[in-house]
Image 1 (cartoon, rainbow, N blue to C red):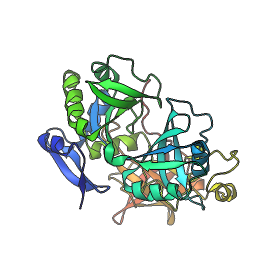
Image 2 (cartoon, rainbow, N blue to C red):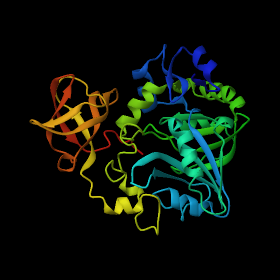
Image 3 (tube, rainbow, N blue to C red):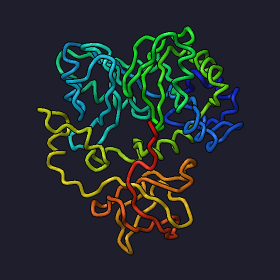
Length: 361
């Protein structure tokens, strides 16, 4: 039985088409807008997303930092209060259990945001690999999360906040009053645009949702749903767990080597990653023929299968059908002419650099 976020009734009132996703009922699009209009609102103005299904943990104790550096590929030794850092979470063979964000609240106190579908798996894994004096708490059910994304996000949010907002990407302010509602506000997101993610108590989420929509009504802010979130992240080449990565794929194969700090003394999966010579890599695919490539479509060079599409669709801002693929390393670079098998029909395509879209700062 699917769960409901605190904003379920708000979605129904706005005409949200509800679907099961990661154990929750969430809108895939809204009747008055649709995926294309929602996508373009985020690229050109602003969009508001319900991401309350995400998992949130709190790690504390004198060995919290040692635990993070043991669990995660990235290095958290230099992370400062008020900063956010991304990392894959790997198993002993280097396969990716999840990808997540770590917020440093204070020394020995870290807020961790994980993917909804992996929440319980992640918690058990982390709990079983704590180091020394470290305690992990699952706070997911006591936190709601909203994402305000787009080039006008800052001016909209500032109307509801008397204090300065986080100024740098991947930073946060632990306590801000937004329309009178206590929130943790971070300058993060999953759309390729500037924007903010706001964490609050579940009972405050509807009021925060309505206050943001009211503040941005004159700027074209609209509610946005899962469909637009997926096309936006694909344009920006942001990997999605279960598509570009899973326990059979390592960070070195899926373009996340920047976040793997092999110079650290140790972390789970380090030995496997040191020993790996990647045989495949993530690359962009632009369809040059007629058709749309979806997840699972095989990619060929002549009669040789060289990999498969991990995510693919028609992207509204680009006005093009694109995808991300895991291909043999010889093809995981721009400039190769390939074919994609779509339901038994070969479609012409080419490999291109990622990301497909990068916002102007």
